[in-house]
Image (cartoon, rainbow over all chains, first blue to last red; front, side, top):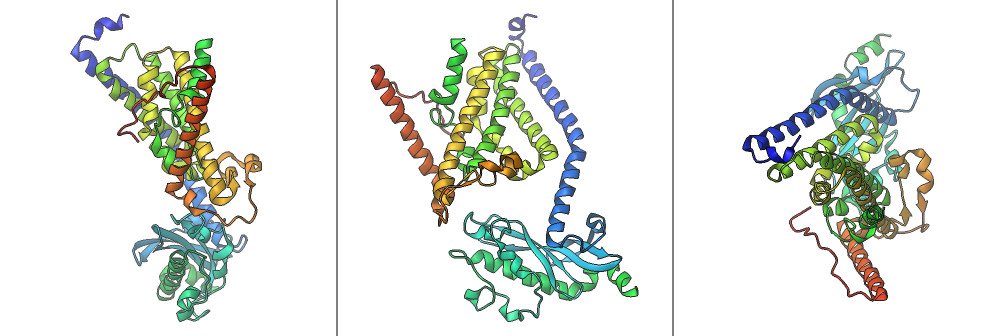
Length: 210
Length: 230
């Protein structure tokens, strides 16, 4: 076909542009359909990996993703996952948020029915590489220090970094980040203390009846 | 054949996207905190460049002057979105590292630049090769800047390469300087400007020496106007 001859028509321009948009939209629609399920699966796997990071392997035997429930959190709806072992409640898992040096820090907490912290991991942060990012367990084991602690251990007033008279190490050159994380975890434990019933939901009743 | 050699040489060195055209500064500055990130971003951009150049050169006869820019933009945006969705679905670990930056490839005017300056005027084979070598040159530049910043800033090279390329590439990860205290400035945004500035100066110096040796008058590097471009 002689394309050059058609180029002069005004309608050719719009039709050509329309044809290109039609073809690209069709390609996008097809791809969106094909990738929809794999993306959901990858995200679920991601969540499963995160959840298993705050709970020791083998300490629960249910599929955590199935236990998702929503309760009223301190900042709107909060997703809770409930780990059980042979029907008995092991932990409630939920995320807490706080403001670090460069933005939101999201920490996932697993708390036992007795109120002890079974595990804490930073899920998302934007802290400075090399300074604040030591809260990430892949960079520094700092966050594992919180394992086994609870609101009374250490006492509430010592839930702070050492610079503020508390029990927890800050990093050389970065105090704001660990301060934010300590505060977040303490607030998470306080939220747990006042919302234990809602956090465990029906798993608590099931555990106690056995 | 010599024509193709010329394309390769242009893309990798003489007309390198970063070092000669000074295009695509947004990803160049934003993701080169480590060699691994630079490499990943470079490879993704290469893929988009090759596909965009291929498609644009295929339809170049049918596209008129008046509508070529919107057509190219639509094609590039579609390719980037496809890449984004596919990586999210089938290369999720890589997506978590680079995901934020994939969308930025649309804003990399080097891609539109190659469609406009090369693919719309040349055949399919030459255009595809141009995309490939421009992309590889871009990858080379980003990896080099990333490596310099990472080495000075952290004392490591290709840290976390296994996250990006799979565990078989873990051998790339090296602690070059043991017990290094770190030099934060190079990891932070100013480090990108320092590294790029010194590398640009180095390239000019090498080119001038080469020209002096060949006895040719120094020709100012082809400055394909990066003004107002990211």
